[in-house]
Image 1 (cartoon, helix red, strand yellow):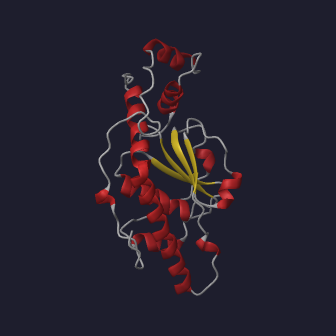
Image 2 (cartoon, rainbow, N blue to C red; image 1 turned 60 degrees about the horizontal axis):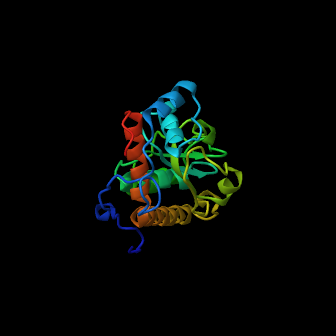
Image 3 (tube, rainbow, N blue to C red; image 1 turned 90 degrees about the horizontal axis):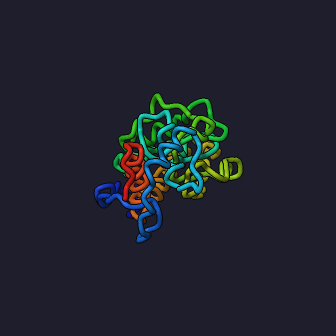
Length: 230
């Protein structure tokens, strides 16, 4: 990706997604989930024995108090005021709405950093009106396919295991709010971070993250509709 002060958006180069099993590329689809077992799992609020991984995923999806269905990507950092907000915004933009995206902090700030709002607006993304969220809002309440940690602070304090999540990725980025300098130097720091996060997001999506996250979402949607894929 060309870097000349900014990153050229490459969302148009991302390929369309074909629903596949939410596993590794080329892996065969899992065994069909028996409808009777699924119904019993929902009725008793616990998975049958032996539990099928898709049954837990379905229950988490059905119980999620969100309008967006299917497992999504959750981005975590400490304050949820800069890095994770940027990553969430770019995952939404370049993911094309194929899967839900959330972000949260282990120690959320009172508000999104003003320079975060400013530099993201330069990219046509408006974060005004959004507020940092605490990780507790999502823990155990939404289905998550991939958890992305964007700072070392959150990596040390966030849960090591997320219910239903298949992946936990560490993308450490420097905290721009901790940088000491003039106003213009701090603004440049936020721009540099913004571009680096966008590059990392697009690279992950093009390397397979798009297909895996969208496939998991597609499978969960079918399961929630009562039509387990064969």
